Image 1 (cartoon, helix red, strand yellow):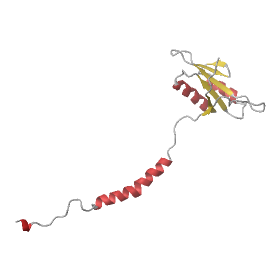
Image 2 (cartoon, one colour):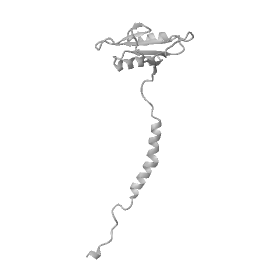
Image 3 (cartoon, helix red, strand yellow):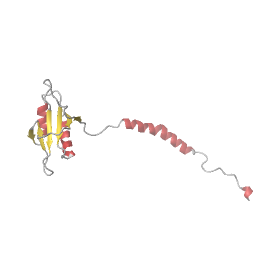
Image 4 (cartoon, one colour):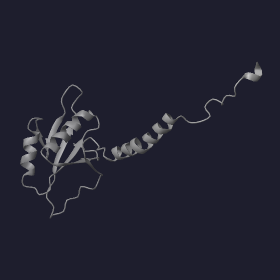
Length: 145
């Protein structure tokens, strides 16, 4: 009886044609697609510039920049907004910025905020400034009263 057994091939001795074909299709079609797709990804968010201490030096031939400050009052109160040292309400911010920037050739607003502020309040002001439209430069130096 043992001599009547047929010889068998070892298991998994060759690749299946389906598996080989699938691997080639994935390599040739999908891999380049994913590589090209990564190159087309656009970042989402707010573009801002950061100004280091001492970098805001204006000469006589430069225009005076528009300066916005967000001042922390308390955790229960909305932060106070100042445009060029004048207190403004949150609703007045955009119209006042438009008025300040209409005569300027370079539409740039410098923004400083207290460290205790919620980031959401800062983003709200950045979004308002960008909607004016103007570029935002974050001032990193601590502003004293």
